[in-house]
Image (cartoon, rainbow, N blue to C red):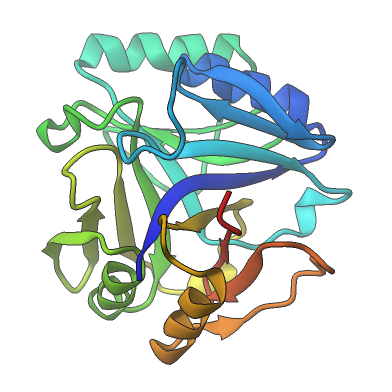
Length: 245
């Protein structure tokens, strides 16, 4: 039984506007699986594929009330590329954001609805990830949470320390999942969470039961009667287990 981390889910008032921003930011294509949902995927992408973690922008009435702990880090290939990328994103409607980061080599931005993300300085570890370098999750215990997510998604733990842990698809492609220690993860207010998909031959109910046995708990975010299951990891980070397509 296995799950695959297939996408990040971003909440927005105007899913089409925010979806267009992210499609242009990443150089990806737009589609829609239904009203209020804008899908952003690489051009010609055969979903699901571990070479990319896709973006779903979902319309909600009041995204300001959403409280997740994840954000995206975008990759750059040189100092010049980083500067050009930041300038292009600002031209698309991104704004500079000050979250107390101080003097750091990366640039913190917010998309047109205030969703925070970072444009990283060039780092060799992200040379082959594609435009999304990492999905970053704030937590109290990176080592402990790495054990959960490694087992949950079948991802390989590449590095782990008291301050952070880094995981990646066992195929060795696509972005990383990074768990970063923060003093008060409950104070984080982002609008991004991850979605997991049962792989062919796996069963959603069985996967949810497996995750519960590992320490996940059911979560109610007002989702109502939907085909996906909302859970929280052992530190309360919410995520969804999708119904197999």
